[in-house]
Amino acid sequence: MIVGGGPAGLATSFTLSARGVPHVLIDAQTKPSHKPGEALSPNARPLLQKLGIEHLLEHPAHQQYYGLESCWGSEQLEAKSFMSELHRNGYLLHRRLFEAQLRVIAQYTTQFFGEGFRLKQIQPSTQQGQQWKIAIENPAQNHLREIHAQWVIDATGRKASVCRHLGIQKQVIDEQFAMVFKAKLEREVPHQIWVEATKQGWWYVAPLDRKHLTMMFFTLQELIPTGEQRASFLAQQLASTLHLKKIISTSTLLTDQIQLWPAGTTCLEVPSGEGWLAVGDAAHAYDPVSSFGITSALASGFYGGHTVADLLKGKSEAHGVYRYILENAFQAYFQQLITHYGREKRWPDAFFWQKRFPTLVDANA
Ligand SMILES: Cc1cc2nc3c(=O)[nH]c(=O)nc-3n(C[C@H](O)[C@H](O)[C@H](O)COP(=O)(O)OP(=O)(O)OC[C@H]3O[C@@H](n4cnc5c(N)ncnc54)[C@H](O)[C@@H]3O)c2cc1C
Image 1: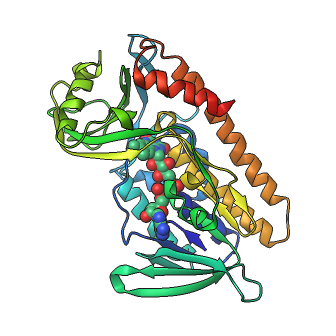
Image 2: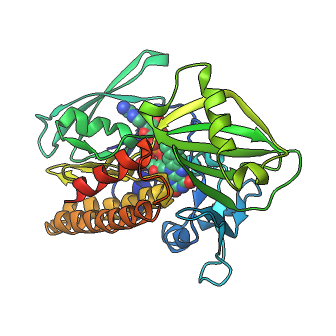
């Protein structure tokens, strides 16, 4: 049974189905909900092909993007183009549509897709050949069900709800938060991403559609003011940029709706165990500066699905292989993260940079 129907849970379902493993999938939301995060990097392409979902990106609502400009570690705005690389473009996804497209496929890959069902309880099963007795509920329909399963897969994102029920510890490596809002465009901008570091954090800006930008300011929770002061805080942070304020000077900030999202690095003590496995953000959640999130969620769903299928066939080494793949990828990410933040030395006394970087170094020691 898969709990969670985001990119990780859905990729797990597609893989299990391709391997002939019957399964059920539940997601707490009846329809895909709003989630931040839309940049799919060019190197995700082979994975999408493997999962058989590359064609979904042909929908005109998903925009191709060809590079990024970044001001990080110096006052220069440095351009990185994908045009000379193997895969020449990434995608700025219409995130809700992308997940809706994946959900349509899941109607065919699952035995039962419980949209609107959430996990209520997990206990050991007394049924022969089954490991878990899982209670799920659909509160809107006052519907309670019990499912017996050999495997439970935690694809619940940063909440890691299944692991919480099983008592698996999650390590929160840093407490970065994203302040997310939109800006209205007066004229079209190039299809690319802008990143700029400031004294109190860093900005990520990308076109959302023809008329809007998605704006994200990443900072520490301690620096985020309450309620009404948030809009002026964001205006100050934007004014402190060297480049971004000019690039978006003709757009209107829609700061009447600011959302806060946890956006730091977290990892489980172990990503799998007897009869359970975690995929996507539930296993390892990445700092969005890496643009790893969606690709890693799909990848761990792909490998997680194969792991369960192999274990059901008695290939006991699959557990170790899964852990090795996930933990190696996480270590590589972590090294890159430390190097990346370490490049920014302009504000050695600022709270964000002072507090943040030593924490990361300690966690890696
Ligand atoms: C501010 C921000 C910006 C980001 N930007 C990017 C980006 O540009 N590019 C990128 O690649 N990544 C980005 N990410 C990361 C990316 O969004 C995540 O890595 C990705 O969504 C992880 O997918 P997932 O399937 O593991 O989890 P999720 O997408 O979180 O899906 C989890 C699903 O589980 C369901 N669920 C939760 N609890 C339960 C329960 N108890 N019972 C049943 N269902 C449950 C939820 O409804 C949800 O649909 C960003 C993240 C943040 C916070």
